[in-house]
Length: 94
Image (tube, rainbow, N blue to C red; front, side, top):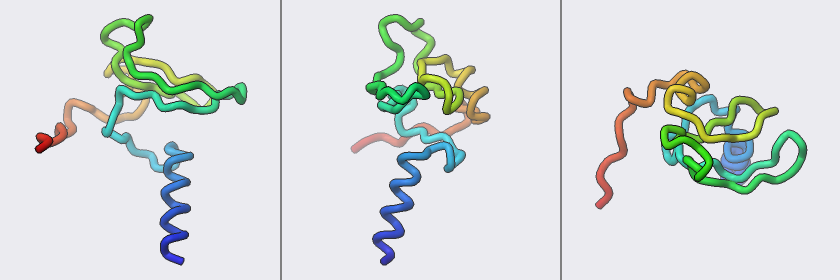
């Protein structure tokens, strides 16, 4: 019973990340695959793409009705309301 509830919570969080309301700092450079507003599947990609400026290193998804794209740190901070400079960096991997 508890396992089923945990599984549903994990699935909801994975499928609807906007419900959580926080920024996942695990990999801000990866735009995972998703279904766009037109119903088509768009494969994932890393930022920046070859066609993006070098400063557009972060994945932004401005709204559920817009496609994901690479953006600057300032644009990501404006969208999420989180100051990335104030976050602690990941620890050293051992």
